[in-house]
Image (cartoon, rainbow, N blue to C red):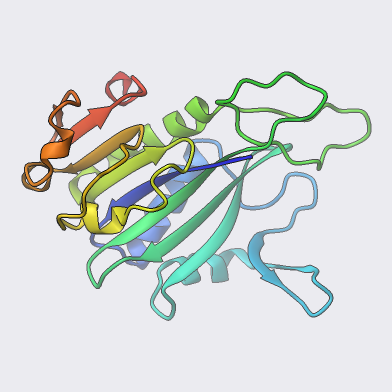
Length: 221
Protein backbone atom coordinates (compact mmCIF):
# COMPACT_ATOMS: atom_id res chain seq x y z
CA UNK A 1 0.00 0.00 0.00
CA UNK A 2 1.29 3.45 -0.90
CA UNK A 3 -0.38 6.37 0.82
CA UNK A 4 0.30 9.19 -1.63
CA UNK A 5 -1.44 12.55 -1.59
CA UNK A 6 -1.85 16.01 -3.10
CA UNK A 7 -2.03 19.08 -0.88
CA UNK A 8 -3.42 22.31 -2.39
CA UNK A 9 -3.10 25.45 -0.22
CA UNK A 10 -5.37 28.47 -0.62
CA UNK A 11 -6.26 31.77 0.98
CA UNK A 12 -9.67 33.49 0.98
CA UNK A 13 -11.46 30.30 2.06
CA UNK A 14 -15.15 30.97 2.68
CA UNK A 15 -18.62 29.56 2.11
CA UNK A 16 -18.58 31.23 -1.31
CA UNK A 17 -15.23 29.64 -2.14
CA UNK A 18 -16.51 26.23 -1.03
CA UNK A 19 -19.52 26.56 -3.32
CA UNK A 20 -17.18 27.35 -6.22
CA UNK A 21 -14.85 24.45 -5.36
CA UNK A 22 -17.76 22.00 -5.14
CA UNK A 23 -19.05 23.23 -8.50
CA UNK A 24 -15.57 22.85 -10.03
CA UNK A 25 -15.16 19.32 -8.67
CA UNK A 26 -18.54 18.34 -10.05
CA UNK A 27 -17.83 19.97 -13.42
CA UNK A 28 -14.66 17.85 -13.56
CA UNK A 29 -16.75 14.70 -13.11
CA UNK A 30 -16.75 14.03 -9.35
CA UNK A 31 -19.92 13.42 -7.33
CA UNK A 32 -20.53 13.38 -3.58
CA UNK A 33 -23.15 10.65 -3.58
CA UNK A 34 -21.94 7.10 -4.13
CA UNK A 35 -23.25 6.09 -7.57
CA UNK A 36 -24.13 2.70 -6.08
CA UNK A 37 -25.43 3.43 -2.57
CA UNK A 38 -26.52 7.04 -3.07
CA UNK A 39 -24.91 7.94 0.28
CA UNK A 40 -22.43 10.69 1.11
CA UNK A 41 -19.51 9.51 3.25
CA UNK A 42 -18.10 12.06 5.72
CA UNK A 43 -15.86 9.80 7.81
CA UNK A 44 -18.17 9.58 10.80
CA UNK A 45 -19.47 6.34 12.31
CA UNK A 46 -22.16 5.32 14.78
CA UNK A 47 -21.75 3.09 17.84
CA UNK A 48 -22.05 0.00 15.65
CA UNK A 49 -19.27 1.29 13.38
CA UNK A 50 -21.71 1.95 10.57
CA UNK A 51 -20.95 4.93 8.37
CA UNK A 52 -23.10 7.96 9.16
CA UNK A 53 -24.25 9.46 5.84
CA UNK A 54 -23.88 13.17 5.26
CA UNK A 55 -26.43 15.64 3.97
CA UNK A 56 -25.25 17.56 0.92
CA UNK A 57 -26.12 21.05 2.16
CA UNK A 58 -24.65 20.31 5.58
CA UNK A 59 -21.45 18.96 4.02
CA UNK A 60 -21.00 22.17 2.02
CA UNK A 61 -21.59 24.17 5.21
CA UNK A 62 -19.04 22.03 7.09
CA UNK A 63 -16.42 22.47 4.38
CA UNK A 64 -16.41 26.22 5.00
CA UNK A 65 -14.64 25.37 8.31
CA UNK A 66 -16.42 28.09 10.26
CA UNK A 67 -16.97 25.79 13.24
CA UNK A 68 -14.23 23.19 12.78
CA UNK A 69 -10.61 22.89 11.66
CA UNK A 70 -11.05 19.97 9.27
CA UNK A 71 -13.73 18.18 7.29
CA UNK A 72 -13.42 14.83 5.52
CA UNK A 73 -15.45 13.86 2.44
CA UNK A 74 -15.42 11.04 -0.09
CA UNK A 75 -15.82 12.08 -3.72
CA UNK A 76 -16.61 9.53 -6.43
CA UNK A 77 -14.86 9.61 -9.81
CA UNK A 78 -16.70 6.51 -11.05
CA UNK A 79 -19.06 3.92 -9.58
CA UNK A 80 -16.00 1.94 -8.55
CA UNK A 81 -13.43 4.53 -7.58
CA UNK A 82 -13.56 6.92 -4.64
CA UNK A 83 -11.32 9.90 -3.91
CA UNK A 84 -10.82 10.61 -0.23
CA UNK A 85 -10.61 14.33 0.44
CA UNK A 86 -10.24 16.73 3.36
CA UNK A 87 -10.31 20.48 3.80
CA UNK A 88 -8.07 21.48 6.71
CA UNK A 89 -7.30 24.87 8.23
CA UNK A 90 -3.54 25.40 8.41
CA UNK A 91 -3.59 28.97 9.75
CA UNK A 92 -6.05 31.81 10.14
CA UNK A 93 -5.47 32.69 6.47
CA UNK A 94 -4.71 29.38 4.77
CA UNK A 95 -6.71 26.20 4.14
CA UNK A 96 -5.32 23.09 2.47
CA UNK A 97 -7.35 20.70 0.35
CA UNK A 98 -5.95 17.17 0.68
CA UNK A 99 -6.54 14.59 -2.06
CA UNK A 100 -5.73 10.92 -1.55
CA UNK A 101 -3.42 9.03 -3.93
CA UNK A 102 -3.34 5.70 -2.09
CA UNK A 103 -2.45 2.57 -4.03
CA UNK A 104 -3.97 -0.83 -3.18
CA UNK A 105 -3.11 -3.22 -6.04
CA UNK A 106 -5.50 -6.11 -6.55
CA UNK A 107 -3.69 -9.39 -5.84
CA UNK A 108 -4.95 -10.97 -9.06
CA UNK A 109 -3.95 -8.13 -11.39
CA UNK A 110 -0.50 -6.82 -12.27
CA UNK A 111 -1.03 -3.15 -11.42
CA UNK A 112 1.67 -0.54 -12.13
CA UNK A 113 2.89 1.27 -8.99
CA UNK A 114 1.30 4.53 -10.13
CA UNK A 115 -2.24 3.17 -9.98
CA UNK A 116 -4.70 4.38 -7.37
CA UNK A 117 -6.63 1.92 -5.21
CA UNK A 118 -10.02 0.58 -6.21
CA UNK A 119 -12.97 -0.04 -3.93
CA UNK A 120 -15.03 -3.27 -3.92
CA UNK A 121 -18.43 -1.64 -4.48
CA UNK A 122 -19.24 -3.01 -7.90
CA UNK A 123 -22.48 -4.75 -8.82
CA UNK A 124 -22.70 -8.40 -9.88
CA UNK A 125 -19.87 -9.37 -12.19
CA UNK A 126 -18.89 -5.84 -13.17
CA UNK A 127 -15.10 -5.47 -12.84
CA UNK A 128 -13.52 -2.93 -10.50
CA UNK A 129 -12.68 0.37 -12.15
CA UNK A 130 -9.06 1.44 -11.86
CA UNK A 131 -7.68 4.94 -12.27
CA UNK A 132 -4.07 6.10 -12.31
CA UNK A 133 -2.40 8.58 -10.00
CA UNK A 134 -1.66 10.71 -13.06
CA UNK A 135 -5.39 10.94 -13.77
CA UNK A 136 -6.11 12.13 -10.23
CA UNK A 137 -3.22 14.62 -10.35
CA UNK A 138 -4.54 15.91 -13.67
CA UNK A 139 -8.05 16.10 -12.18
CA UNK A 140 -6.70 18.54 -9.56
CA UNK A 141 -4.38 20.45 -11.92
CA UNK A 142 -7.19 21.24 -14.34
CA UNK A 143 -8.87 23.22 -11.56
CA UNK A 144 -5.81 25.29 -10.66
CA UNK A 145 -6.49 28.04 -13.21
CA UNK A 146 -9.88 28.70 -11.65
CA UNK A 147 -8.40 29.47 -8.23
CA UNK A 148 -4.88 30.58 -9.19
CA UNK A 149 -5.13 34.01 -7.54
CA UNK A 150 -5.74 32.38 -4.16
CA UNK A 151 -3.30 29.45 -4.43
CA UNK A 152 -0.34 29.87 -2.08
CA UNK A 153 1.23 26.47 -2.68
CA UNK A 154 0.80 22.86 -3.66
CA UNK A 155 2.71 19.62 -3.57
CA UNK A 156 2.24 16.12 -4.93
CA UNK A 157 3.80 13.14 -3.14
CA UNK A 158 3.04 9.83 -4.84
CA UNK A 159 4.56 7.64 -2.11
CA UNK A 160 4.10 9.68 1.09
CA UNK A 161 7.87 10.06 1.41
CA UNK A 162 7.56 13.60 2.84
CA UNK A 163 5.58 12.55 5.91
CA UNK A 164 8.47 13.44 8.23
CA UNK A 165 8.76 16.94 6.77
CA UNK A 166 6.51 19.78 7.90
CA UNK A 167 5.33 20.67 4.42
CA UNK A 168 2.75 23.07 5.88
CA UNK A 169 5.67 25.08 7.23
CA UNK A 170 7.44 24.99 3.87
CA UNK A 171 4.40 26.34 2.02
CA UNK A 172 3.78 29.00 4.69
CA UNK A 173 7.34 30.31 4.27
CA UNK A 174 9.25 28.55 7.02
CA UNK A 175 12.84 27.35 6.70
CA UNK A 176 11.99 23.65 7.22
CA UNK A 177 14.70 21.68 5.39
CA UNK A 178 13.26 19.72 2.46
CA UNK A 179 15.31 16.59 2.99
CA UNK A 180 13.21 14.54 0.58
CA UNK A 181 11.62 16.18 -2.42
CA UNK A 182 7.99 15.57 -3.33
CA UNK A 183 7.13 14.79 -6.94
CA UNK A 184 5.80 18.29 -7.51
CA UNK A 185 6.13 21.48 -5.49
CA UNK A 186 4.59 24.92 -5.99
CA UNK A 187 5.51 27.64 -3.51
CA UNK A 188 5.79 31.40 -3.54
CA UNK A 189 8.98 32.45 -5.30
CA UNK A 190 10.41 34.27 -2.28
CA UNK A 191 9.84 31.18 -0.15
CA UNK A 192 11.61 28.97 -2.69
CA UNK A 193 14.66 31.24 -2.38
CA UNK A 194 14.96 30.16 1.26
CA UNK A 195 15.62 26.55 0.23
CA UNK A 196 19.05 26.11 -1.37
CA UNK A 197 18.44 22.36 -1.22
CA UNK A 198 16.10 22.87 -4.20
CA UNK A 199 18.88 24.31 -6.38
CA UNK A 200 19.51 21.03 -8.19
CA UNK A 201 15.84 20.74 -9.19
CA UNK A 202 14.72 22.52 -12.37
CA UNK A 203 12.76 25.62 -11.39
CA UNK A 204 10.13 27.27 -13.57
CA UNK A 205 7.60 30.03 -13.01
CA UNK A 206 3.93 29.22 -12.64
CA UNK A 207 2.27 32.60 -12.36
CA UNK A 208 3.67 34.18 -9.21
CA UNK A 209 4.75 30.77 -7.86
CA UNK A 210 7.98 28.84 -8.27
CA UNK A 211 7.33 25.40 -9.72
CA UNK A 212 9.38 22.22 -9.35
CA UNK A 213 7.90 19.26 -11.22
CA UNK A 214 9.18 15.72 -11.70
CA UNK A 215 5.84 14.44 -13.03
CA UNK A 216 5.83 16.37 -16.30
CA UNK A 217 2.12 17.09 -15.79
CA UNK A 218 2.04 20.66 -14.50
CA UNK A 219 2.76 22.53 -17.72
CA UNK A 220 0.43 20.41 -19.83
CA UNK A 221 -2.50 22.38 -18.39
